[in-house]
Length: 121
Image 1 (cartoon, rainbow, N blue to C red):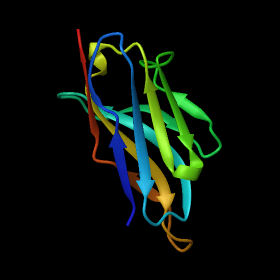
Image 2 (image 1 turned 45 degrees about the vertical axis):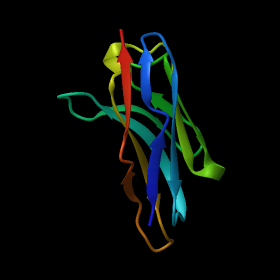
Image 3 (image 1 turned 135 degrees about the horizontal axis):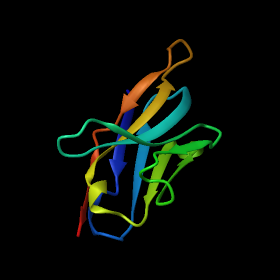
Image 4 (image 1 turned 90 degrees about the vertical axis):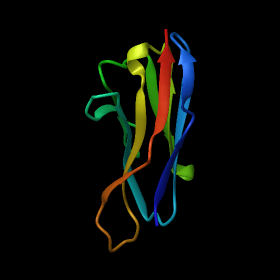
């Protein structure tokens, strides 16, 4: 069974930095795109950043220049370096991976349970 576990969230002052990690474990035959989403209070889930197996990335306009997504394919881990944090970045950050567990499986989405990031003024 595949599991995605996020870590690195916490409380930080505005202007500070955090690095989130998400490690996928279990039966993984083939890993494809990975990404980070976030959901603030009363808001719908928002795409933050994505990264392909080959390392191509996208970042939401709201975080460009401040956040950087990266991955370590050997460890099935995706990271989100967050700098110059703002109070509006406060949210639960969710890890997403598109993978298949076996050669006979189709690709599908897997989700972590989320890690809380709180940015104070």
